[in-house]
Image (cartoon, rainbow, N blue to C red; front, side):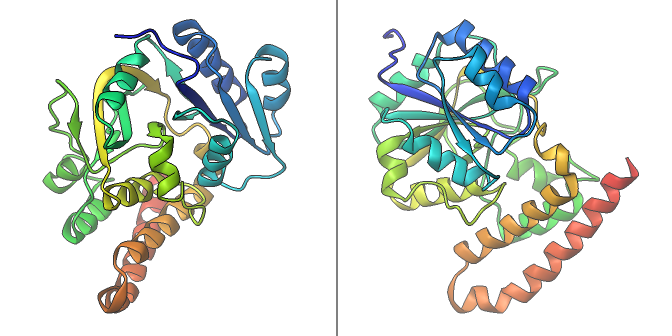
Length: 287
């Protein structure tokens, strides 16, 4: 295994008003991986995030957006800000807890058909986060969409979220979470990068879908772990983010089911997503 090379990979952190999470992410990254040529893309934060990066992490390249164009747009801006052959897309609420990123890079070097790779992602309590999943069937979509919040262990949700995944080695999956996604630049650029029609959510699903359609593999590799303190940025605007999640699901449906089949199903899907939005909002409002 080779030593981690600064010329090989650039971490790209997407931030929106999560200064303390961003500080922890950068500090733990420096502690475990050294001063990699990281890029922070800030989407118009008003909490002092930009000043903190400039003052405490002068070796990090800061890209400042005047407003919040969304996660997909920020990822593309981050990739434009570096020329490294691999980019590690990260949420700002990720925490590094070990070294060994070179294990994943070596694996991608040995397997040039891999376009995207997801590491093991842990919840704050140390349990495995469902960071790699299947493309659900229409039936799985419906059952998971309406029962996932109230019966998370139903068989359709378990199948979609790959809850029974053996965590003993790398394996090909349908998609990996954009909270921590190692991308081969050449592959990402070939398919046009992240689709900026998505403001937040599902942009990772869409990118993996296009990578697989272009002949690349998407792989989950548990040889490197980090912690994702999930939902720190989205919780600031919970209703807006719930709306954006459902809007993104509809965009992906239109992309996946084009033509006459999609046209017939579109009104049904819209009604279903609207009903799911109301149900999810009501359930969360009661908590």
